[in-house]
Image 1 (cartoon, one colour):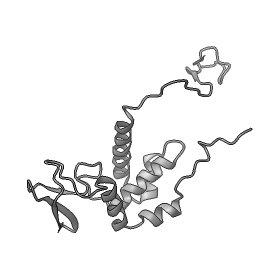
Image 2 (cartoon, helix red, strand yellow):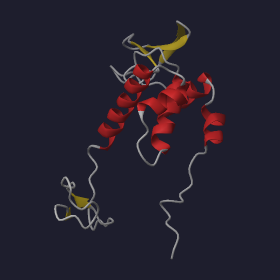
Image 3 (cartoon, one colour):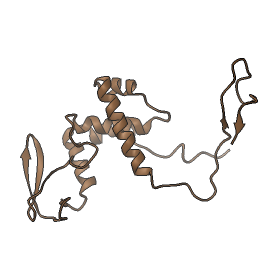
Image 4 (cartoon, one colour):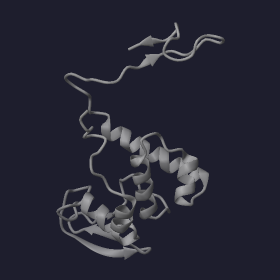
Amino acid sequence: MSMNRVQFQPGLSMAQFLERYGTEAACEQALQQARWPEGFVCPVCGGRRASCFPHRGRPMWQCSACHHQSSLRAGTVFDNTKLPLSTWLLALYLLSQHKTNLSALALMRYLGVCYRTAWRLKHKLMQAMSEQEAGRRLGGLVQLDDAYLGGECPGGKPGRGSPNKRPF
């Protein structure tokens, strides 16, 4: 039997993740590179010239053309939050690495935040991932393992042999 290439594709280990994104400065630099790979672009006028200044401990950019001020997090899922960017990226890593769903309770334990924060964090990230993938649809020949739709009746036979389950 041949090796499943999808299952064994290379990924980022936890140690590699922490080495790359373990500090707030490293996370901000990665976000800046992902958001503006060729330098700052004003979200209002599209200008490329800006001055950078610190504002409440975080960098802020002001467009030289229209004088619009923008932060690194503005207009992203990380906007209007007090959580460190490193916490957000760790949550994103944990949610994307689990084969099955990661509960908000488990996320709370991993991140060291309260349950309400973990729940909101998870749902914001899942919504953002859902919106990102909304336009993509499978095409061509799609193959999958067998699946059954339906539930077991009280006192009925459980599993695949149940008469009220239909293969699809």
